[in-house]
Structure formats: C-alpha cells, structure tokens
Length: 378
Image (cartoon, rainbow, N blue to C red; front, side, top):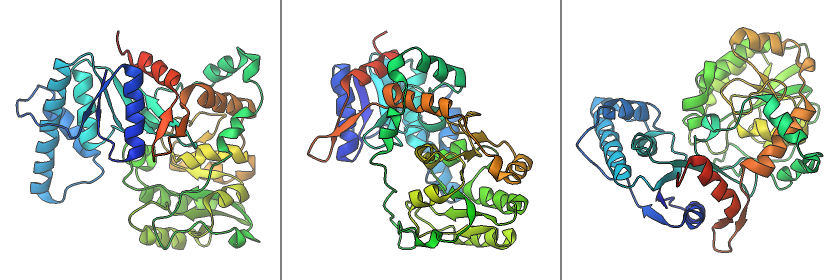
C-alpha cells in the first residue's frame, strides 16, 4: 500500500492512482499534517528543506514561520510512517520544501519511498526510489549501459529514436517568449545553443554545480565567449515557463560578450537545437533531447546524463573557456548514446497512455518493478 500527497491535477492524481493499484491500495493525503513533538533530526531536516524551497520567505519573521511549518510537517510525516511502515511514501518531485520534509520523515521512519515526475519524453513518467533529476538512481558509468545493451541482440538499433517522435517545444506562458519559425536562423552563422532553465526550479537550486544559478551561468558564458573562434556565437533563449524575465542579466551578458551572445526568445526551441552546432546546458532536459538531433552537448551542472562520451561535462570556468575555444572538436560516442537511450526507453521510464478523462494509465508491470526497487513489501 502507498500513502501519497495529492497531485492537484487530474494527470498527477491518475499516476498516483496507478501506483496505488499496483501496490494493492493507497491512502490519498490531501495535505501534510503537523506535529509539534520533535525528533533529534527535526531542526536539521527542516533547515535543509527550507534552504531549497521554491518560494523563499521574505524577512526574518517569514523565514521563522516557514521553518516552523516545515519542522512540524517533518515531525508529522515521521510519526505517520513510524505507525505505517508498510506504506510506501509517494509524492511529486519530493526534493524541495514541504515535500522534501514529507519524504525525509518517511525515510527516517524506515518506510520505502517513490519520487514521481514527468519524464523528458512524451508519454513517459519518472518513478524512482532515490529521487528525480540529479538525485535519481540511474548509473553514471558508461560500462553499465554498454554491457546491458550487449546482453540482448533485440536491443540493438535505433528504436530509441521513436521516443522523440512527438517531442514538441513547451508552450510559452509569456508574451515575450515564443515558439516561432526558424526564419531568424537564416544566415545566423555557427552557434552553440543555450536554453535557459527556470531559475528557482529544483534542477537549479539543487543541481547547478559550479555555476550555482542561471544568472551566474550567464556571467560565465559571457566571459568564456571570448574564447570562441571567429564567426561563432552562443544563442540563448529564456525558459517559456519562467515566471520572471532574466532581461537584466541577459543584457549584461550580451554587453560583456561583445556580440558573441545573441538572445533569441522567439524561435522554436527545437528549431534552434537542430540548427546549432551543439547545446550548452546546466542540466536541462533539452540537453538530453538534443540527442535526437545528434548534437554534442556541454553540461555545466549535475545532470544524470553528464557522462563523458555521452556529453562533455565541464567542471569550472577555465575548462569552459578551453572547450569553447575549439567548438568544432565537440563530439560524442554514438554507441554509448544508443545504449543509454535504449535503457531509458526499455527500463527506466514507464509508458503512459491517455485515459480519455484528462489523466493517464501507467504500465503496471513497470510500476511493480519500481516498487520492488524501493523495497516495498520487504
């Protein structure tokens, strides 16, 4: 049986319902309760969860109140799962703020956990006992994927490319960021494309690595752009779901780069990927999706696909300048990419199908495998 936090959308709740069906039942928790009896770890867990909350409180009083809320939620979760150790804790993302407190309480109580999020490919979902994004359970060693691929002749080939068949750029929530045609790319010259990410997303707050933030990445790119050969530039696009504009740090980066950074917020994201000579990202799923266009990828942060040979991981500003000095030398291992993408297709991302009512159904066999990986029932 699972205990899951309400998803608040039909699609999310249908995924949780599918997991509950496969687990033999589920308890839907409309909110996280409060308990004011602490554990020795309570303050530490609450501080860590507050530090990565998407909505950071303003002022000392706001911060104290939010800390107290998360602290009490952790206490409640730990007590709940201490009473119900047979229940698997399930929630959406689960890496920040109150949801992190919920999942940490379950772990400290000894309960199994499953973290859920949409996959970077259409009609797939992430269900992982360790976490999502940079905290997921996927191996980071190339040999794992190459050995897995070699074990079965049926896995050979490029069937994984069907994952990207219905891939479209995310619809924009902003009037100043669009998904227009590629006319602006005519005569643009050679460039590396950098799709920006949502600044307060957990991908950035937790896994930005040495660049630390989207704004600091823009500063690093502005400096490193000087190393690009003549005729090359970096093309940047803001995330269509970002609630606030990055106009000021973008303007500063463009000015510092002396024409070697171009902002294009109107051209379709994947049109820019296709026309580019490579993609630069902290850890955006666009970096992974660029594999469908056979583009080399530079990762600056902690991405699960930041594996040498799969992409080019860059660990500091000096290395970024060295890499940008020879963009034509960027490359990747096609066999490794094929193995990783086939594993994601066959094993890691369960398939979903629309249920006709705004939700989805999920492959039950894959869910049961995920439950076993979480240790449910052991």
